[in-house]
Image (tube, rainbow, N blue to C red; front, top):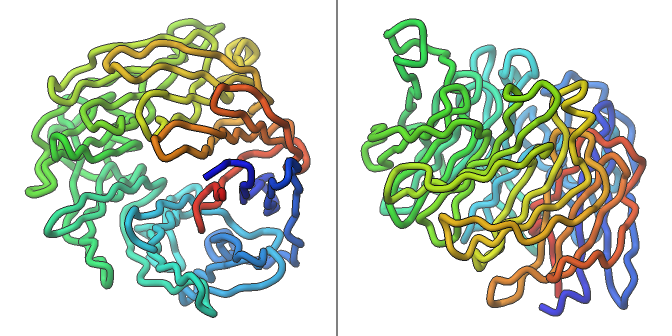
Length: 415
């Protein structure tokens, strides 16, 4: 991998409409291809076509929720929906999250009035049809996060934000039966001792450690991490983790890093936080507070030596005005639980709640290229492994609500 040729596919979400673009860099130049926009479907939200990705020839791959059929066409419907995707390592499967109606969190097309769903697809590289749907499974309501647990009986855990549960699926590659539901209820955090549903756990953030062989689920509403034995589905312990909205596992498997933002401490300033959890000790071992920073998305380099954190926006009034929404923060994560600042790089603006990041890495796991969308500016910043900005590329019109990398053939491709 030289990094001299790369391709990025992204969905530009403007709220009431979307665009799909591909950026191709070769021979020292970056070209932008905007995929033609087709007529809007005009269907209700959960009935609209779902954007899955692009073929090598830039045809659009769509999922029809009615019947779960995959089609390929030259244009992308103006009201197509993006979906959060979880590629399953070592397979050609991708799990797409159908998060349901914005108010109720339900998927009435597939699951009626009390559940939403996940759709598991099998990519078919080189075949006439780019994918086939293996199954859509009805789980709990609201936003989902998915984590895969290997073993003799592989499992997939799906968190359900509005119910306060985890749905457990047998990851058999065929039927994906629902084999259990974990109620994340904590009596000391609720008004009633009876573990009813829904609760106020609001799960978001999950990881499985091959070191401890335990699943760790962040309950935002309780400010705790539930420690779960995948073999029994029992909650064995809870680790307090205040000021966190997500967790990320270090490649070595012993430490988690939680990220979040404190909006209550100071009415004029948001204070971001990174907290390192030592899983062997079962406690927070190190914290860093970041004034006027809302940490949006974060990723470790594959070698575990660097942690990259993007900034975006949150809050309102003076808190929002004081935020640094144009930064990439880089930390030395080679000696956890110590987490040391390395650099703060100015990029474009993200006056929205989420800014993802993508990267390319060499065979040793060191990052050689960073790809950082600037949704408010309508651009993409490209950095090298030494954090120098190589170029800033046009993505589309400014004012995106969100930018999503496509994971159909990998978020970033290089040769």
